[in-house]
Length: 251
Image: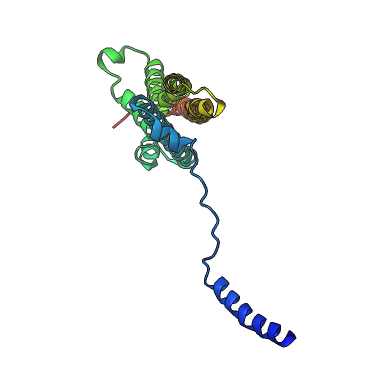
């Protein structure tokens, strides 16, 4: 009897092992798709919601473009200032010093404007004191340089002041649509309310994310512009003194 039982187990166990080996591997169920977030906000939003998101994206890209472009321009202007202080005052004449500066440099523009003022000091203008006339010409040139450094900052100021309100508009519109859908479905449970309202609140977060870098960048660039313009004004003041001392005329 014992021998028959051992033989029967010897036949059954290999068959069971082969059957288990042929079964497919157990796979974990796929992760459910996130019903909330930016993807759901874009997919479920109407034309107004999508237009609001597009406007915020455009505002963000514009502010970052201006920020990077102005930083590069300020860095270039700082290098031009160092070059002017290193080479201009070592020249024999103002004309030679201006010619040695980089084309497009604000310091060369100021020097050439001052020389042009001395050349035009004749006729009715000649009745004006040369000191006053050259000083006014240098001040106008410095003001032109200052206006050039302010270009683009209005974009940052506009984005920083309006982006939160654009995001708030998107939030109000999204909550309105969510309440309409909830009222139409007749279901006011927390799972039905949290999704649409949470997606609408994302609009406010996007607006703040666009506005905060614009405001910080604006303040930073204004501070850097002030430092750069202090150097420009000092150059203009020294140029005025040297030009009157040498009595040089523009060619």
